[in-house]
Image (cartoon, rainbow, N blue to C red):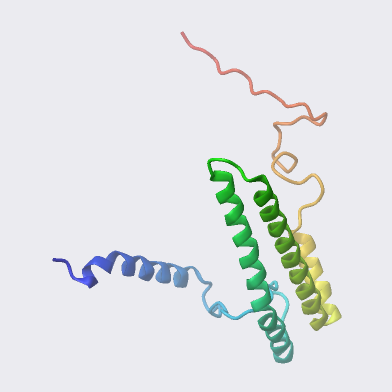
Length: 171
């Protein structure tokens, strides 16, 4: 009869290997990742202790509301999926679940937007400018993407798809 330790050994081994790989992939001398609520800011923005405390307080205060809104959206989506998998569709319940899902997602998006605005207000004008520059750099421009970016020679400028030449047949 296998012991509990031997039955769970593969799980412990996987966890240990994951921890080692995460540690090894970190940059030498880099600080360990922070596991506290807070905004995701680019590395170029240095926050004072007071700013870190303010941002932590903002995000910590909003976390229960954001979690509740996410739970509501998830519950409505689960109900909607279950109704879609049923033998016959109850359109009234499905419509109500879809509306609940939409309202929860809208409230969640609004709450996150408000939190982002409050977080930006904590930053200095120079930090906000750096943040916007970093975000603009990361944001793709109009027409960017796999069909329009560099190396997208499969579409000619007129937009008509270009067909690959047929492979040669050898007798």
